[in-house]
Image 1 (tube, rainbow, N blue to C red):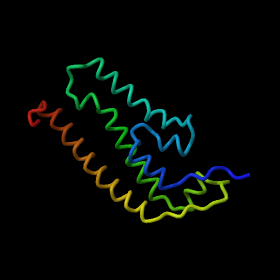
Image 2: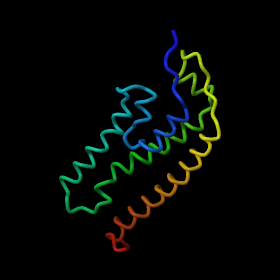
Image 3: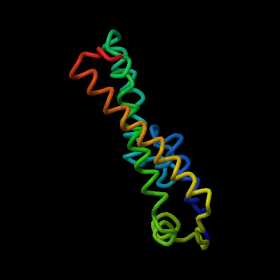
Image 4: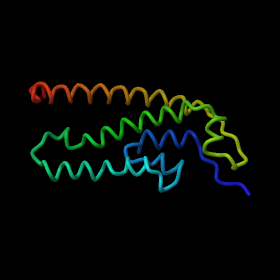
Length: 138
């Protein structure tokens, strides 16, 4: 009896698009994955920050989602750069099929690096502006 085959490209795509909410973790490991639930908790935490500090800068209010999103980008790179054999051993041990990565995954990884690096640099710049100048630069 074979089990469902997890697609590496789709898992990477989920990590890029919905990584802040842990969709890739739920796809790969099931609905009770602890780190996936931690990703999912970033949304109510952001709402809690908004509710408790409505006058705070908007960046502080979305910071839990930003941190979770950056972790999702890192996980997308880890999943996408994992060799197919290792991915199959971890997530498809009894599926009876083998993964075969294509150019789509390579393109997705390049876009992930572009967006993740830009988002990381922007986050660090904004945090430095808010913490050390009180937001005087924007």
